[in-house]
Each structure stands twice: as C-alpha cells, then as structure tokens.
Length: 425
Image: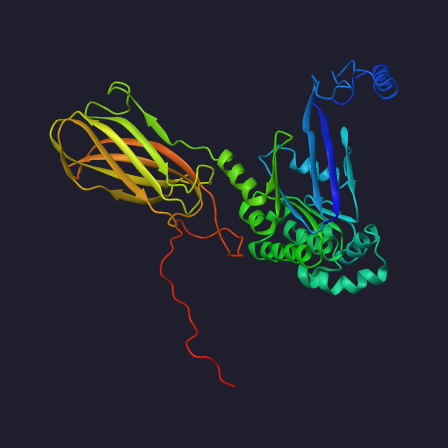
C-alpha cells in the first residue's frame, strides 16, 4: 500500500478585510484576551472561534479542504483566480498558518511559489544554491555532488558569481527550479512561476518533474493554468472553487469537468417574431445556434471538436438571390476565414443555413462569428456582428511540447516521415 506523505484535514484560512487591528490599543488587547484566552466570539470582526463559518469582515480563502497525497503522486491543482490555490500551497509549505484544520506531512519540502522568494537577493547564485541545500538539511558534500548538475540544468554558468538581485525573472526562476528539483526534496511544491520561463525551459522543467516523480518517487504538488501540462504530468486532480473542494479524482475527469464549467459560451439565440429579431426592414434573424459535436455531454470543447453553425432568418425583401457569409474572428480581431454560402433564389419567408467547421482545424483560443446576408453576391443586406462566441481548449495528446502553438489554424494533413536509407556499418 502506497504511503501517504501529505494529509490535509478540514483546512480553512480566513483573511480579514480592511485595516489590521481595531484602531485602538486597548481594544486590541481586549480582542486578544477574548479570542485567544477566553476562546469567545470576536467582538470587533464578527469571527467566532467555535463557529469559523461566521464572519462579517473576513474572506475565507479556504474552507474545510481535505485530501491526501501518496508518495510519488503528482497532484495537479486547478481553479479560477482567487480559488485558494496559492493559499493552499503556502500553508502546506509552512509559510502561513491556517485558521483551522490540520496538515500532516512526511519528508523534506521544497517550494517554488513565486518569483523573488526562496533566495537571498544579496547573495550570488552559487551562495544561494548552498544556502537552499542547508535549509533542506543537506550537508556541504551532498550539495557539492549535485552542484554541477544544477548549474548545467539552469544554464547560468557565467552568472553564478553575480548577486541574484541582478537576475532577470526568467534567470531567477531557472536557477530556483533547478535548485528545488535537484536537491532531493521528498515533496516538491510548484505554483504558476514556470510561466515566467521561456518555452524551452518549461519543457525541461516538465520533463524533470516527470523524471523525479516516476523514477525517484518524489511527490509533487503543481498549480498551473496550462491544463495540457497538468494532463500530461499529473495523476490526480484537485479542483478548488471559492476556497472549497469541488472535485477530487483522476486528473482527466477533473480537468474535463473544470473546462466544461469554465468555458463561457454564447451558443444559441432565438426570437419568436420578426419584430423581436435583430435586423432591418429587409432581413430579420430568427435563430442562430452553435452545436458542438461532442463525444459525450461532459467532454470539453477543444481543438478536436467539430462545430456546426445553424441559422434562420426572415427574408422580408421578397424574391431575391441571397447568400450568407460566415466570418470567423479571433478575439484579437484577426479574421480567420470568410466563407460564403451558395447564392440561392429565395422567396419571402424563413431562410435557413448550416455550416460545419471540422475538428482539428482551429488553434486553441477564443473566437466569435459574424453572419453577413448578401443579395446577388454584391449587395449587403444585413450584418449580424458577434452573434456567436466560443472558446477552444488545447489538446496535445502524446506531444510533449508545452509552448504556445503557432498560427491561427492547426490542421491535421497527411504527413509522411520514414527512414529512406539506413546507415550501414
């Protein structure tokens, strides 16, 4: 049975909003006596020691969080900004104290939580490597045995004897991660700081995390908004929502649930009468709809998903040759494509159209669709701007490249690669 190295039970953390203290020394003393000695209700901030959920002037960054992490397990923590992810890591790293709850851990903990923490800025890179090792309880001989490996990984040989206060944020993170990963901690805790590094260094870091967890049995807690990296590295997922555990389980299930919940869609709009629909005296829209062709209802909307656009409009202009242009834009304003329908003779009444954007065509990102109704392929009748919008999440499969994929599109074309002629010795 795998050993539990981190056990969190009913963990809560309260932050008081507004000024620190009551503003009066006598009242601060009274408050301390009431809450710490008598264990009574806080008379000034509305915090009851026996009922921690009651607070008038506080924010519960974490509330009643419980989970376990086994030895060698990689736990990915996801959630929106302000969900309590960084607070949880700081408590486990013993940087801040919890308001309530218990944490039990076994082994040495090394944390990389934000740029600028963990090193003495006045010391050189060389001195900080030794200082970090001493803090972790290593001997000078043990640190020296890892020293060359750390320097090679960080690729900062020429800056080793420079005070780290003169390092760029990327250089700082490279050295900090190299130290954290190579000085053999039992538990490695990483926040979003890896996003500061370039794509090549991110790839090295994620590869090293895989190595130390799979081959060396280290336990890793990893917070990142790069869900593709979390899916490829982590075994288990923890989804925090407003300081509470919303889901804990296999990383694929947690990530899919989080993506489905986080995506904000403008998928369908419908109007009952021409007077209600957007348009003018010639064209009025009746319905616009985006239908993702998902393998199952809980699947996330990612770059593999085919998207069907359906629309209906009232033709109020009488008999006319009409066509519709479907124009897709990125949220940066870039036009991805402008696709025209056939030019069709339409009578007065409802006209409908449908178009499918295939999967494995668009890159990940946020998009919106505009529809242009045109007469005789030349005369615009009405433009319905931003009638539909959607987000596409990334998907890499077995690809271990975690940087941003270039380009507006990401098609899958036939691509052949084979050994043409083996080398003969």
